[in-house]
Length: 289
Image 1 (cartoon, rainbow, N blue to C red):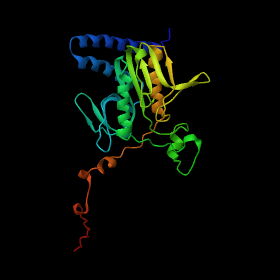
Image 2: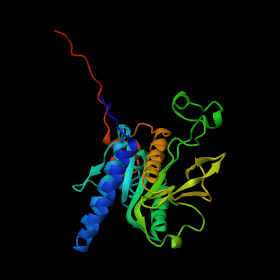
Image 3: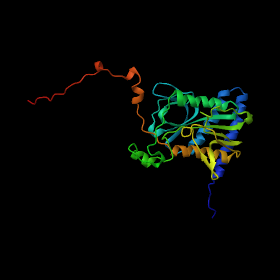
Image 4: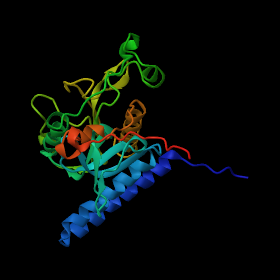
């Protein structure tokens, strides 16, 4: 009796075939004049495939991010968040969601074809989220393996000692093909660029270095100057597998504190309660007859 096998490479090749077929179909739809639908089909497929490889507690959506001051981000093609610690503020009919900035652990951009300005444009959205919307990084109290008066039992149990923060933001761009790759523009200060760039039919670029013949990946929030990148010209399975692995490893190294709506309520007069709004009633026991 022949034992059945489930080969990971076969699964990955199936996904790659679906993505390339979706691009071909999207180009036909685009040629017919339906620009929005041509992009939606690919984006929905990529989000679906990423979701398949993540633990159940994480959701992958498109949409906007909002902070306690009411500032809203540009729309992101991919937002990954911990649904067990996150309320959903609003979801529109096209499944676009608005989520609190505290819960978001990863953002992504999807392109059919990567062009020279795409990293710069994505970088502007990353900068707006981190700087203008004041995304806060929560310190890991056991960073470096040194315990002190601020070290929490929660961090001792759940956090890795090589992480400065509990919630660094992972950003990545996924494209199917590239056009004019040699002319690709990046930020002059090497800041606010996506951590990783994956081009399915070319290979990938990741922020990191090589040490003792091992790839050591980095993340911008932990290492602010993005001055060393690793290029791999291995398309297909290698590219897609690296992307899934990077996202999973990042999520597994993060911790989100339980969400509190109080920050969103105390920053506007609409939710403030003054003394004139409050009365105290003293309860009296009824005398028995």
